[in-house]
Image 1 (cartoon, one colour):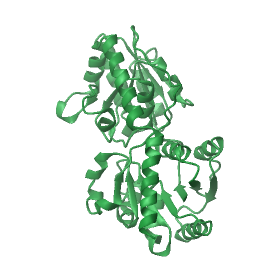
Image 2 (cartoon, one colour):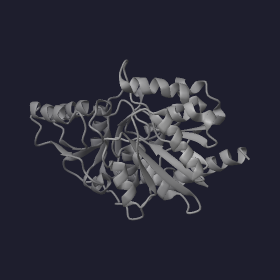
Image 3 (tube, rainbow, N blue to C red):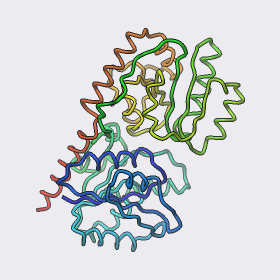
Length: 364
C-alpha cells in the first residue's frame, strides 16, 4: 500500500505533528511520502525540518498559490509513482482534490483537523467556503473528534464517507511519571499565541486569582501574533514575576513534569496534541469544553468547563487547587491510563490502515 500525503503548512502545529506521528506509527509494509507544498518564494518549512529529522520520505513542492494545473500535474506524478491513495491535510488540497476528482484514479481522502472561525471576506473564510463544497466529493473524510459529526457541512455527506479517527501520539515508556507537589500552583499554557486560544483571557484569570489571594503562576510556551499584546497585558497587570513568556520551546512535553496543571482556554479546537502529551505523563488538565477535549478526557473528568455547568476556567482552577495531593495523583493516574488505552499513535495508525484497506478493496 502506498499513500501520498499533501500539506501546505505554515508551521509545526497540530496537523503537522499528527502527520509525523501517523507515519512513524505505520507498519513497514506500507509506504508513505509527504508532499510539502508552498509558494515559490518560501524557504525550508518547519515541517520539512521535522520530516528530515525523522527520516520520513518527502518532496518539497513549490507552486503558485492557487494553481489547478500544477496540482493536476502533481497528482499525475503521484499516480505514475504507483501511489494508490492521496491524503490531504488542509483546505488547499481538499479543494484541489474535489476539483480534480473526476480526473484522477487515486483514492482521494482528507483528515479534517478542525476549523478556525473566519469572518467574511477574509482569505480563510474564502478557503473554508470552497472547502465546504469540494470536500464532499472526496472518497473518505477522517474527523479527529466525534463532535465534528454535528458540523452542518457534514450533515449532507453520506455517513459511509465519514470516519472519526482521534489523534494519537507515541506512547513513550520513559515518559515522566507526574506527582502532585505543594506550594505555588504552577500552571502551563502551550500553543500558538492567537485569539482562538483564549490566552489573553487566561492572563486576566490568573490576575483575578492572585488578587483574591490564590498562589498561582503561569508559564506560556509558544509564539504567535498576540505575543506583544500578551506581554503588554502582563506588564499592565504587574504580573511579570508570576507570568512568564518563554516563546517557542522545543519539545515542551519534556518540561511538563515541572508544572502542576496544563490549562487550555481555547474557543475552538479539534483534539490538541498538547492535551495528549499532558495525559501521557499524567499532568492534570483544566480546560474549556470545546472540540474533542471532553471526549478525550472522559465524561467524569472534573476540570472541564462543560456548558451545562456554567463554570469558568477560573472556577475550575480553584477547584483543582483545593484538591489534596492524593486526589490529584489519582486523577493523574486515571488520565495516563486513559491515554495508553485509547489515544496512542499505534491505535490511530491501525484505524487509518483499516480504512485505507477498505477503500482499496472496494475499488477492486
